[in-house]
Length: 470
Image 1 (tube, rainbow, N blue to C red):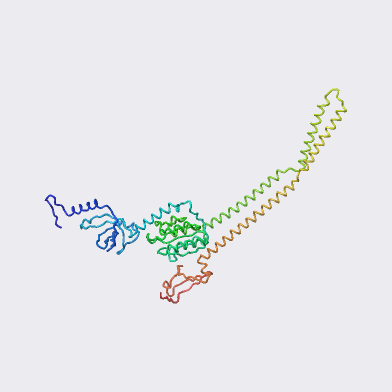
Image 2: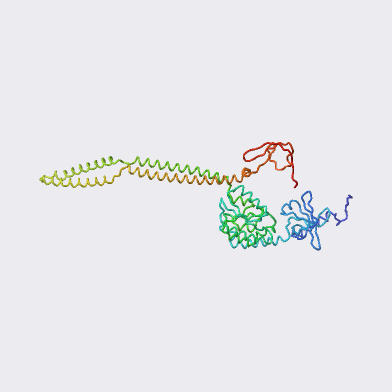
């Protein structure tokens, strides 16, 4: 290309002209939102998007670079009505006017989002999102209700997760549309039906989608129904980035339908491990209590005093009292000069008799109060045997209950296993390497195969293959 040079003052190049125009557009036109219909949408190998945005009378070329279009949550196509945000500029090499887009959303999304924010603020001001009013979710739930569409992929995810984690749970599906005009009425009706059915927990789930697709979960009627529920509700709508009014109104918000099913159920393997641990602790606690009672009985037996020892102690005390009494009377009366000896002797005799009678009465009372240690030991032994019998009976009953529950869980696990299917008359075929043969197209005549039943195997070779037409 020929290089032009300009020596006259005031004359500029084409490149400088385009640069000036670009700067002028950037100064005078702040980034703005523009609505229109997409035409001629193309995606370059670099990941950039190029399209024309038009209305009834005009159109403008648009470019959206890969770094920005990765944030768009839908794939636009020709004919879509959208709202785009960007900077007015020109494509300098060609000098063409264009809009450089940095954000895109479906047309009408702004109005929906404004409604979303208004309803959120209204319900939040009323206290409907207050964490203090939310109900707790039990760790183990035996009755689980699921409110969703029967055609939703979310239902398959929830059923698969619950079948794997919680075969002990009974799952009841309350069908409802999850988008469209009838969705709000069906969702509120199914939620009320699930609440009346006395479920342990209710899952409200559906897959991801645009704001319009998820709008039924942003309606005030659904939010107020969730708040009025007596049963705890877990909402798992869309993907982790999708947030709806129902998420705030529910008792717990799960990132996905699968996460909702996991939060509503404890893994059966964890429960069986904890059950075995509790059984061991119960046995250990019972053994320790029996040992404690036995040691206490030994201590009580060792501390008992025989009646003979107690009588000897009382006899010694009586003799000591008698000696002290005689000595006191002698000191008081026998040392006085001129004392009448006969009078003193009589007084001493009466006093000693009185004291002896009192001592004998105390002795008889003490003797009557004594209890044969054998009777006390027999009473303690009877009480200990009764307590031991109660502990053994309670232990047997608890172990029997735990054993029956474990057998029930084992039966549930067996019913969910492939071997349970084989016991109903089914069989499966594997090749020589042990790989499962799911189709007749994977074998040919003379191939060795193994047929598996629940009670044995058979080995053979393929004679003829007859595939069925689809």
